[in-house]
Length: 69
Image (tube, rainbow, N blue to C red; front, side, top):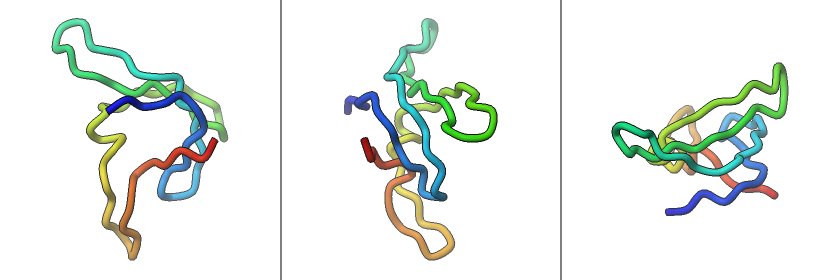
């Protein structure tokens, strides 16, 4: 599944800007590249499977991230 660039909300409420996806040169695993839109605005990567995961925690059940813009 493609991850569209844009603004995403984490299930805990924080917002992130997704740049797109990148493939690992050795394993070919696909990662999502994004940055925090709060605090230090640092850049991060996360495996696509984990980014698209469904979370069932503390009374919440739904996507880990959802696109809002």
